[in-house]
Image (cartoon, rainbow, N blue to C red; front, side):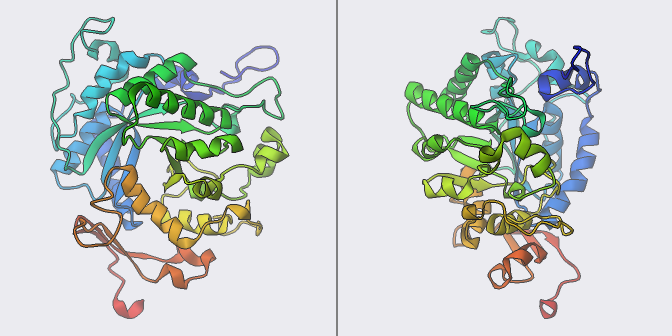
Amino acid sequence: MERDAEGNPTGVLREMAASNLVTSKVPPLTIAQIKEMLEKILPKAAAAGITTADDAAVSPEIISAFADLEDEGKLPVRVFGEIVALPELGVEEIPLMEAERSIFYPGYPAIEEGYSYIDDLPGLLDGESQYNVTISTIHDYSDDEGLFRFQTGKLFLDGVIEGHTGYLIEPYADEPSTYGTINWDVNKFQDMIEALDSLGFQIDIHAIGDGAVRMCLDAYQNAQEKNGVRDSRHKISHIQLIDPTDVHRIHDLGIIAALQPNWFYYDENFDHVSLPYLGEERAHRMYSLKTILDSGGMVAFGTDYPVGTDYLTYNPLDGIRTAVTRLPLPPDSPITEPYRPEQLIDLKTAIEAYTYWGAYTNFMENSTGTLEKGTIADIVVLDTDLFSLPFEDINKAKVVATYLEGKKVFTDTEFTADTA
């Protein structure tokens, strides 16, 4: 909770611990409302050439909405849901997370209309918890071949640089008294990662600052030492800033860097936020994409929509363009200088980060992510060959058809072969 010099609240609430003071009072969206919104956005995603998406914060209402849409044949995109682990509960939440992981049976009503598990979470934990109750409202169904699936636990470790809540190794340049914010107690965080890993969860951690990234790597290393090494495909999302001495650990630990290349340019906030908040050296050390790849790290791309910089987008072509140019996405941007041009990657690598490595991240590389015999025909058809375009024009290519498991889920009715 932000306060002024006299200690009075300013009205600004930063990160979940503070914002929940307000959001917990807001009635949750009903399943019907969520379905209505999903039926608007998912066809747009398919029209942008998206065949698979990760939802990084599903609730029981969202679970039921996705399950109902799949049962009704209205999912034009495959969705992997991620269950948020709450720092105030820690390992006590795991029984619920295990139960939720099993709920993706198509069409099964996971919960009653309007129910929100956040307020009643203690009542859903199993008999081994301190609350000594049983899970009675969640049934154990599974359909691991469906379009809506669970396999991942999500933790939000820090905040963002813009709010001075991204956690840094060294203090903020403009506020030397703060290193940022950590949402978890360090020991409870390591315990949670170790426990989820031991139960076979894939783990995805939001980490912006270099201090948070190091904590993630330490926790994953601890889990491997305690539980042994397995094909976990754990993720760190964002990695806006990473200390150079930590880069090799992404490869060494087999972690996937889940990055958003549509952020990788000089935006309108750089001079007013990044530069004064981080200082010259760190502000010009963000988004070390090529450095991670050159060290052998695995990288998968996404957009983090609806979060972004000065240009919100869910279009993969925007991300591919920025990965190979490091130039601003807003068409009216006056900036012509690429951000950290030494971090540019080639077009083939950028496409693979959105296709093969996206599939690999979701344990589907033997089924999709490439066009070859035996795969399930997730196909995106463009009106032009990306390799024939100037890099600055890559996002001007148009999606003319999208197929999900061989079924056409989008077609541009104005497109014909003659107009290509």
